[in-house]
Image (cartoon, rainbow, N blue to C red; front, side, top):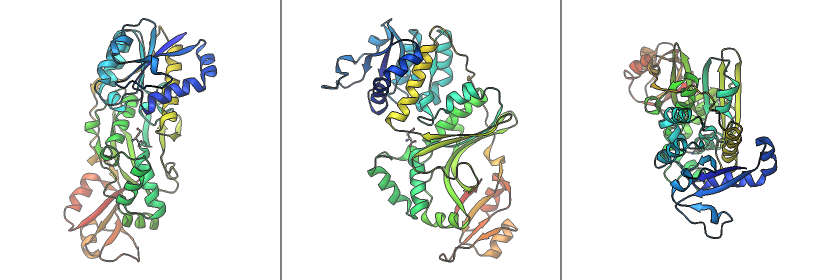
Length: 400
Ligand code: HSE
């Protein structure tokens, strides 16, 4: 019998218990033995909950119990999750976490601790919720050098961008609606400013590069400056605006960025709508692949956590090698990357062409007092230099 502990009995932790209860029989067959949740660690007591008797408040009760082989961390945040997870690994227990904040900061170190203890540290649910993207990178795509990984990895903002695109609403209105529906937090900053996506692409890039990418190094723009007018232009261009977390190989490193992009109809991420997430991967042998599904929510995320539990149970007594060295990767300067830019400016066409040369105008007859245009392909640095010469640029969104 495999005995496990769940640290944090909130949305994901309670989902983990539900997944194990619901699919107990098939999960046990896959592990080759029974599985039991022995402890729930939480500050609360959960009077009347069927798991009430399993609740403990001190993580040492779990760390010191030799019967516990696997620990689930679903508390969120860096501390005290880091202290507890480290203690569990040092006590010889394998750990799975859904906590992207923890993995983004301490992933490399916790993998190293797991290696020293001959146990495993897994984190499938930390990116893309229920989508098996981490296992795909670590197990299925190991024959490839990954040239690009680009994803819609934040359900809140994808829901908002979808509503704006489909109904032409303003940002503030869709944010209010997303908050009412429980898709956006009361304080939505981490989602709408791209910080959540930044942590996720830092984790994915660390895995494909085999070394630490600090999320603080990732250039990040959110969606809070996107307006209904931008959506009108996007429609005119046959494109959609999506918040992309993207990483592209540049020599020995990667150019990593989170920002709204204008995607054409034939882009694989064009049709990813609502709260869904998707990750596009390009391997140098495989070519293109896409992973699509629920990026958040109790049961989809718990499904990924429990899949890790099964994997951990199958590898008790054997560390699975995983390359994520702690040395910080110097990521490529995004200003040196090439692209085309959609720009809205109050300037007239003569002024625009004096600065940008030949451009492609986007006509929206309903709008007056501004010009929308698409630049030629140029480096970000070149765009910035030109943009600084043009008065009153009201918007810039990158093309993909
Ligand atoms: N706030 C996140 C999202 C939750 O909207 O995708 C999952 O990480």
